[in-house]
Image (cartoon, rainbow, N blue to C red):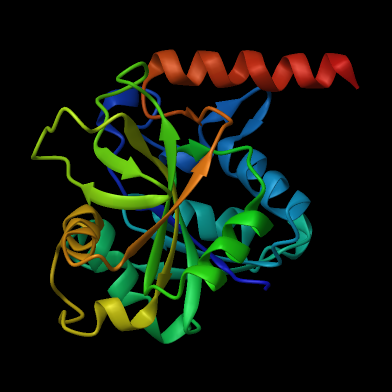
Length: 236
């Protein structure tokens, strides 16, 4: 199953200022290259051929630099939030005309070195309208927010903290277009709220991964990922 990836790259990236005062987070340099190029290289290694970038703040700079993605060996299409930021859920809804029935969703500041094909296979086998990858976090990197038991997500919530929550949303999902059907195209809403509602109805599949996640949402995360990528260059 070859699915496109929706990359949610529309945020203001306030935690990375002053780096992001004149460029979007996707263009912040990590290990000598804009972060988006590292993301795309990883996606290509996993057989992914198309990326839909949901962009907002300074998103035109990304489009000016990469155009249709041919120089990076991947197809890139763009969906702009418009006059107001639409949030992670609203951005996907706005992009719906570009999307097939099912697609990966990846946050614009996440670097997730896992087997994307295995995630797609788990989605196919689950028969649910969405799938979330989960990681046994035990509050190590961030607050755990997933009750995952016997291969099933019992609850995902950023608001309700239960003692059974030992896992965290890893940052890679597969969604179907149908879960956005009830939302208007100009509404700002959070994907997390939609996924929480699915989990409460037993409609959110789960797939456990064992490789920790990396992110550039904070200065510390930026440094840590840079060290990882540079060490890989040395090992080649």
